[in-house]
Image: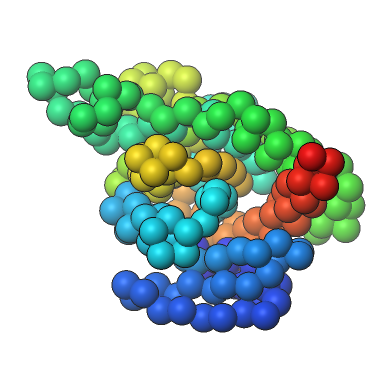
Length: 246
């Protein structure tokens, strides 16, 4: 969301702003790393367009997708962090032509994030949760007391999951899914087409129930940008360290 992007954009040095397709791309350096930052826009189509442009015009060598999500697993609470292992499009259903959730012409019902990508981001999130004590104090004041990290499957679709009925139906159909959002699996399909590494990291903003709208907006306005920026700081530190050690 724009509220999440503002702190990232403000932290980019030597910014060049490029407008394409009603989007503003910010090219520069973030914590010493060359980056292109952009608000993906909401939904599968919009985010797929953004990802395609990042790959074709800006020639990025990886995509990190950050943002918020609704908890599907009862083990998740607001403020927890989920790193995607597999991404499903939960609203894809071309039966009887093919299996439910199968993406046409791919033979796949999900897109898997390489284990090394998951491991690196997991370490970054772990470092953030362990060392950023000042931010933890801020979270504690908002009753977010023990944020944790989870790796698991994420469901994407052009539906805002905002009722227990929707949530339970999704869980019945995709029992391995731990959270739901509206873009990740579409970006994963683009990255799969172009063989570009992808990492999707989501912060839980709501419980995907009848209070989801109020909870999500409040969390985004207060904390989401700080989460994304801090996680990116740790992630960039790790990938730079890995590059130096090669």
